[in-house]
Image (cartoon, helix red, strand yellow):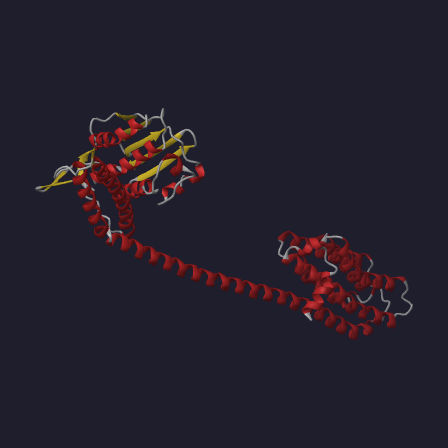
Length: 469
């Protein structure tokens, strides 16, 4: 039944108005109200035609006004000016009702009950727009004021029909107007009910989706924790045999216990050692990240001078940099910076950053390490290079484990993509921050910031010397 009704009403509604569900429902109500309201209004006309057969033009004007409502759906089909047609329909209805009330019965006219329908229907047709609502009630008030003014100027209402003839038709007209308003309101209520049911269904679907996403997230977190815990527990099992392999390869490569017979065997021993060291470094980085994820990573903190630590770390990387034709410059204005941190991990942070800088800076480039301390802003350690750089869209991605940009590994040597993420995690464990800025073809700047609280300021507490964490 509803589909048949909608097929009928939608034939009158332009495609532009069918795009939005809210406008479509209001347009359907517009069509239904005009096709249902006009026949109910004609009941009053036919009664007056019976009691006032010689009415002539005044009654036929009322008939034309009521019958004219049948034309609005067809006009709507020809134009998408829905709001304009709604105001025109309201204006026509007010004119018909007030003209009919003036000619037949005045305040006792069977036409007046239809004034109830005017604001109700207009509010349904125009939707929840405050300006339109104000205009509707202003127009209704203006028409009633004009109606009263005409009544005063005319010294009363014309008596074309005796008052006793309006009693029965007045009740019938009131009933028809009430049926019209009730039917329209019920249709509007059904629309609201359907929208509410659809909204509740959508809320239910979203809640179910949210529950499933939460369960999937919890499952992923459990799997990630299990993976991290497994890797953390594997630290001893993996490192011990690798250290044995490296140690025995060193013995063979250095011929510590005597000559091995062929020089090539000694070379193989060196190859085994280098490969083992590389593999141990990778496994160590993976295990360190796993420990950090599980919260089992413990910093071995102590007070130390950061300046010589930076110089020593640069010395470890300088042979590789020299081999690639990349000079490293160290710039600092501080003779000493006392830091309370894990010196081994701070060295690891700087070593990872320098290794990346050397790897991605070609011959003729340069690397600069700057170290400074500004009172109130902590310690800043910067590693800048003139290498290939990183696209802006990939800056966040390279800080995630195992991520590499473009063909970096193919063009500049191997790597797991763990150095930078591990460095950031270690900096964060110290309460600091690692920031990255880069420009393709211009180079990269990595800044490590240690908070002011990390500057070692020993103070005496009773008999004990205490250093703030």
